[in-house]
Length: 332
Image 1 (spheres, rainbow, N blue to C red):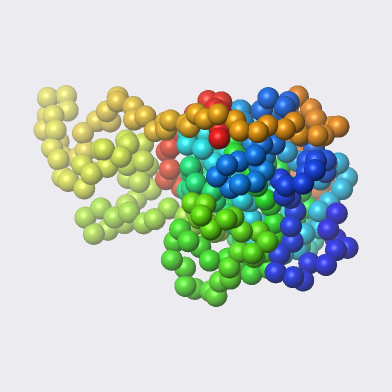
Image 2: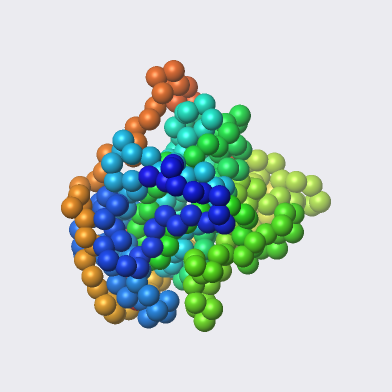
């Protein structure tokens, strides 16, 4: 779709909720009660709203699996608003220099990074919620660091799933300034004016790469935790973490022993309440290929030569135990 278009400028716009029938190039999974276009008072413009299950309610570009996007710029930006306590996912189909198709599946559902030769599940536990966010994904870095030895060639497919409000999707040639964390390692650039939200809108720009997914080092008594100790800390919840740093004795089967007390049976609720508001101006999404059934697997692109390797999976624990609810809400 973009292969023969000029991509040497600062950005390439992939999607905008403005204009007439902006969803015509997308394949919509879900009916008009869960995916629709509306006027948002905060951004003073139209947005797409996706609600409900992130597994079934989604938008896919391009519409036909035989088509490809052919986007070559390094950074992909989703201009989104993710509510509290709701799941959100996005899936990217990439092609490397060896013409091998691979998938990057980002989701708040995932608790750890899981990688096979052709597919990666990437957690989004750090995503900013309840605020408009320019979520910037360094797809060149994700490709090379997750699929060792692979070199990014093009972004060829995008899926955006519930729950979110979506205003724009675009690629950037240069790294944008991360307003969430200080990052002075490389020069940064501003979000292009044509892609910016109004200055009076509360917003952040959040850059994600593999380094920001890695678990910060936690120490016990001046030494790094072992993997088993780290796992115990994460499984016991935040309130018990502080007690791990103390040498506490307790009674076990009539004998006094050193070490942490037994795990508590108490469960810690991390569910956050969602916002409930009134829809302002609602328009149905025009799409002839809308489907209410769960879509088949996005772009089945397993190379025959790689099938024998697909069963091998590496897991990297990221140390986030949060669990997101899947309650359907009404957004502003």
